[in-house]
Image (cartoon, rainbow, N blue to C red; front, side, top):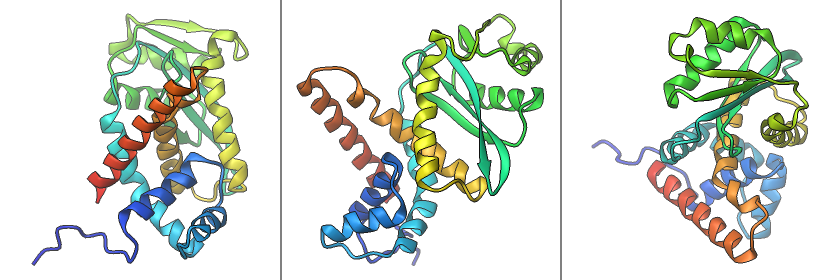
Length: 236
């Protein structure tokens, strides 16, 4: 007979999903998560934690992406330089006007082709925006002109330090913290999978970090925890 739930582990999914959530939610190493779980009487090796993140990370990210609501009509695009296994890469990121991450893509180049690849990927997941905000990298304009569906979109280029582009700069900071905690990314595919789930979990807890009353913040946090539990149940 075919096993209806092919993921066999000696730990229940509630522990697995909590460990994966800890690793992607906070700038922690596998050994940090191992110690936090051990404090609660759960003995698991850091290598097992790594296997859990690799095995379930993309599944959790897909479930979260499916549950996310429609995002705003303004796109903010930016790219930062990062290192993967000693080689320079470019991390392309897009957010809406509220700071929610639309997508994130790790590429080796910072040219027209890379910009077009990222924009095409975005259009496959989201509606055509009304406005696209970018820095003054010419690759954005060249790529936008080559995509017919973006012909009527208002493309606004600003200097990277402009106030209207701060919404995406804030998202880069969390990635930098995670990068430092891992002492750099080792493999491109693994880094892409990690960053995708990290971005979705950041979106999930986005409202819990805003300057609202304590009661509203706790309500938002409860909703985020309930959604995460539902995501884990869907994967299990």
